[in-house]
Structures are given as C-alpha cells and as structure tokens.
Image 1 (tube, rainbow over the protein chains, first blue to last red):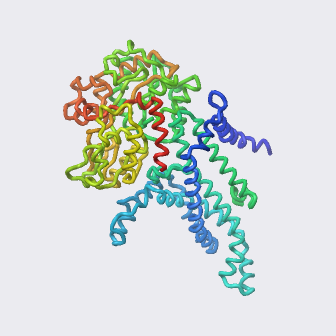
Image 2: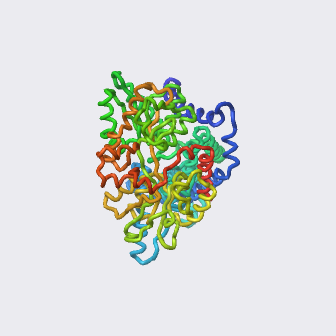
Image 3: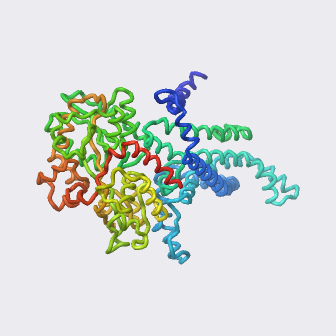
Length: 270
Length: 352
C-alpha cells in the first residue's frame, strides 16, 4: 500500500510542502531572522483594509452563489437522470474556458459600451450608462460566475443521498410539500450547504485575475498585495508574509468548519 | 519598477526554466550569449533590427529568452550564484536598482565606445538606454473631434473636458503627470514634490473610472470607448489607432521612459556580453528598430544616420523635437529612498 501511495506523496512533498515551507521561511528570514514583514502586515492599515475587503467580497460571493446554486442543485436532483446530466453539464461547461477569457467576456457585457448598457439604453430604462464594472460590483458578478460550480456540485452530491422515502413519509403524514422541504429536505442538505460555502469562500479569498481585470484598480484583494509586495519591497519575504497570513486564515476556517462537518465531505464530496 | 506587460511572477520561474533548456540545448559555439527581452512583437522587431545583425557582425551566437517581467528572475538567478542569462533588456529602474543591490555588473565604458558617446542622461554606471517609449495623454477623437486635451492641465480640467478618464495604477509617470498638471515645468520635476503630487491626484481621483494595470488593458479601454482620455504608452495607442479606432495622443508633456541593457552579475559570458552590449546600441542597428515597431531608439545618434525618414522620426518618442516637449524620467530619483517611499505610498492612496 505504502509503495503505491509513495509517488503521490513524493509529488505532494516536492510541489506543495517544500515550496510552502520555503515561502514561510523566506517571510521570517532575510539576512537573519526578522519579523519585519509580519509587523508590516499587522500594523499598516493597507493590509487591514485589503483583508477586510477580501473577506467582504468572499462573503458576498458565497451568499449569492448559495442563493443561485441551491435551486439549480435542487432542480438537478429532482428531475429525471437525463435532465440532471444536462443541468450539471451546463454548470460545469464554463470550466473549460479559461478564467481570463471569462473575465474579458464579463467586461464585454458590463462595460459602458457593453451589451447590458446598450440594451438598457435601447429599452429607455436608463439615460446614462451604469457603472457595472471597474468596481467591486463587477468583480463580485464575475467571481460568482466562476465559482458557482463549486457550490452546485457539493450541494447536488448531498441532495442525491437524501432518500426520497423521507419526503414521501412526510407527505403521507399530511405535511404540505413546502413543509416537508423546510422540515426534512433542507436540514438534511445543510452539510452540502456548508461544504459548498466553504469551498467558494476559501477559493474566493485567493482570487487574483478577476479583481485585477474587473476591479478598476480600486478593488485591492489580498492576492494582489502579494504580487505588489514583490515589486515594492524587492524581496519575496514581504510577499510571503502576506501569503502566509492568508494561508493561516484559510486553515483556521477549515479548522472551524471541521468541527461541524468532516473535512473529506468538503474536499472529497463523499 | 515599470514593465510594459504585467503578469504574475509565476512567469518568471517559467521563463527561468525555459532559459535553462535554451542554453543547454545548444552545442557550445565559439562565442555565445543569452539575451533576454520582453517577448512578443517587440522582441521580434529587435531580432530583425538589432540581434541578428549584431550576431552576424560579431560572429557570435545569441540565444534568446523572453519574460514579461525580468526582475524576480534576475534576483533568483543571481541569488542562486549561477545565472544563466547574460544581457537583459528591462526597464532602466531595474538595472539601476539591481546595480545598487549587487545583482548587475558595473559597466566599463572604455570597452563600450558607443555608450561613451551617448549623452549622460541616457546611461548610468550599470546600464545603457536601449529603446524609448512614452507615457502620453491619449484621447478619443469621437469625444473630442476638435479642441482635444493637450496637456495634463487639460486632463485635470473636468469642466472644460468632460469625459471618463483612466490613469495607470502605478506611481511612476503618474506622479510626474500630476505635478505637470499643477504647473511644474517638465524639466523642473526632479526631485519630485511627492506631497504636492498626491494632493493633486486626490483632486482628480473621483473622476478616474479605471486605474489600469496592464498595457493591454489601457488599449482595450481606449478601443472600446470605455474612457474618453487616459495616460497610456505611445506604442499601445498607435496600435489601437492602426486597428481603425478613432484615437490619438500628444507627446506634449509625455513622460519619456526607457528600457536599458544591463549585464547580470557573474554572467557566464561576461566578455562577449560587453561586446554585444556595445554593438546593440550601434546607431545604425538602433535606427533600424523604429522601422519595425513604434519605439524610439535608445541611442539618439540613430537619428543622424539617415536610416529613419523624417516623417517616421516625427512619430517617435525619442526624436529630438518630440523629446523636447516631454519630461525625461529620472530613474535615479525613483531608485532613491524618496522614490521608493513614494512607491510604497501609492497603495494606501489607492485604497482610501
């Protein structure tokens, strides 16, 4: 068994553990031990603002993705197999397009001369083009689009395991469909909700291309500080410290969530 | 410091490993160097105008590598003690900063006569100007068919010139523009009055729709009519105009910037690298560069060779008459502690 697993473990060691360790080391060692990089992260307010904004955006994206994703997963779960495959393929399809291309597609839709603004003006809904992009709004819209599958898939997997008999039992006892949903289905789907939300939230924390392209320069998320710090301080340590703090917050989130739901449920979607 | 194309530094590591393959894959010729630039149409133009002719004349092999942002790779390569690259074409500020940090060789100008003949503002102890570009005021001719904005004072005047605006999300050249908008003459900018510049920027900030981060983005904004005027690099604007968009720019109060050639500390082929560096800034090779791309020669003597026709010269950022209208960027100032502090201040300005 160990012989079979060892190549995989070696790859993980070489490609994940060592680089991350090196990253952490650089953040505290530069011609001697130093906590200067961390002092900066914890005392200068640009870092606080960026972390706060990143968490706000991630929270908004997660909630919107949940509101949009839950009905989709529910529908996919309740229709015949052929239809559910179609729905899930539509959810997964955008995965085959690069994040960069999708960000530009949103630009074409949302900008001043974009499709949506043109349409609104044609229909006489607005007289001036709306500022839909180059701000936090545009960033959130595109990020929701990119992360939606990470919400739908765990939700669908959880819903699949809820036995249909339970719903029928509820109905036979006289409950209306909405009451069976609220009292039986919804509580049983909560592990999926938690799994999906954790995935989306954590992935969103590290988003880089989308805010960079659609944020108009004002939406400075943490990942952007990482790249900016390499340029600004001429050493990887300054950027590593930001990355380490971000990584630590992700691990903290997983630690908290794992008290409520087993981790392989989120990661392996069992 | 400033790069014409901005990507993540993941590319740096990728570029580094590609370089490794490039140099090990080629059998040892008599003399060879590895030359690195930013790739794309720009490097293609250099190959035709400068690299191939130089290789032929010197009888050496020039292995090429390209990377959008060389700085992290320079640090990594020199830091490892065994650099693979010899000569790098990168924004002048990096050469200077690299020199100060011991990552770049100090040049012996007695071995580089072509550089010794150049004006002092075009070289420093670690590098020589290779090509020029300019951060100019570009505008839509649809919005401004006549009476177009012609200076940074106009750009700041939102009453006289209403419209959406974009600036680069970077202090370099932007602070210079702000000071010119506040009435500072282009040749009296340095040392920059950073407080005054940021104060002036606060004034225009509510009217800036986009703070762009990459050259491609600035081109897209202008091309799609997303903004009516912006600061952009001259080559990007002329490319958009060539595609048929109704856009134009002025060199008036442009900020003249350069990339320079420098040699990595401990470069594997130091002697050949110095020979190449001298050849690459030869006035005739340099004059051939703008025939292939919209960048100006780094060596001003190129304009005396007769290779560049007057009508072509008039379009180039470093042509003497155009250069006279612009501010020549002081990379020495930007590399100084005051410059670095100004760069750090930018992030908090953007977030407020």
